[in-house]
Length: 263
Image (tube, rainbow, N blue to C red; front, side, top):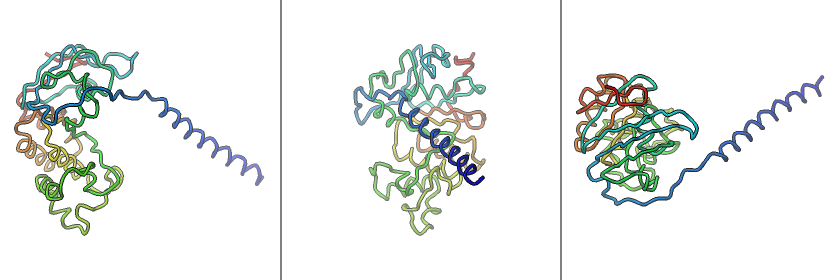
């Protein structure tokens, strides 16, 4: 009986390990993104104008169309709210802007077709605050400035902008305070504010907020909106939201319906 029990245990262990091997092979077979293309000037985009021309998008090469011949123009510095029912294609607009899926048509940023740009260069010029903020295992400083491009005083300044300076300054390690994987040792609101501080630090001309305030309390939501109005006053801001309060200050509203611009 002891040998039988040991054999069953080893069989289960083998099955678990084979699942891990299958996952490794699955990740290894994923098609790699094409990082070829032209680099961009440090000053690009200077204005933040975005033009979608006949943009269609699908998540797999043989999948159905999620976006269907989208045509619209966002003028420089305009704050636009994007709303629609679940599955209407709101987040897919961001997907197309960052070249994450299969697209046809043209997306122009300051009259430059993004298909011709290096992916890393393109994505570095667009700040994104997602619904589920991404924090890395490491120090607060590493999360704010992963490539160590800024001085400590700049980091403290942006933390002050989002009202987190007093909290982290009171901790013994300050900017060296350890952040757990996924930011499990800070609140959801603080995670969003750290992502906002990161966006302020980058100072890009285009900011995308994808349901960024869906999981935060009303006070943090108000702080986010107020900071964005002040710090991104001359930037192009795309805000995807379900709550009308989130886009109440937008200059224009884009209504999505079944992958098309609604009437």
